[in-house]
Length: 216
Image (cartoon, rainbow, N blue to C red; front, side):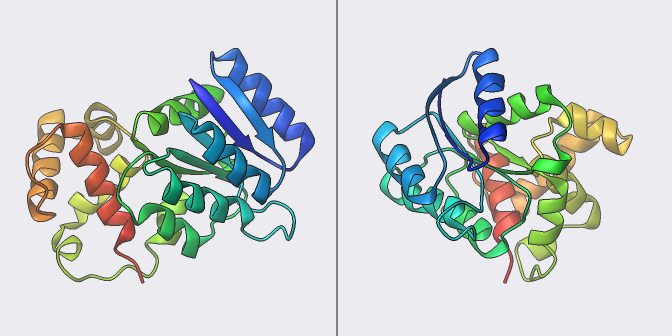
């Protein structure tokens, strides 16, 4: 699986290269600035990009903006943001095309290598991997209009866990309910969000993106 890495801190960049390589990823290019990241993404069209938000030259939001620009040129390019910060405006823009293959993890909350590697693979496969804190901040000003506003508190809780990339079994364990109950909630969610029958994984991603995009 081919990866482009955007990270300006040399030690962290080297560590991520070693980690990804050890788990059978091929890091085709690792860059340390926004412009270099955009060029690498468009040139290599990797299976997944792992990018920081704040990169040179101004250390504001170059990494995330480069990823968004790359997705405009390479539609559906999977992007996993790995950052210390939640940049709400551009994070919502990253989610806005509803193509899936997106993730946003906070560096200081990634404590398990296995979970990180799984998140990279899940995003590469077209899924989502959202840190709960990122979800909380993105939804802090969420509108309550239809259709997302029609979800019950339990359905929103289930959908939030889906955004983290959890399976029905994992959601059931987290909420101390049966998988049958979770399946019922997910079917209700799909119905309320007017998502037509398709592959279940695809509907899960579309539901998550609708949920996270319902913000101002």
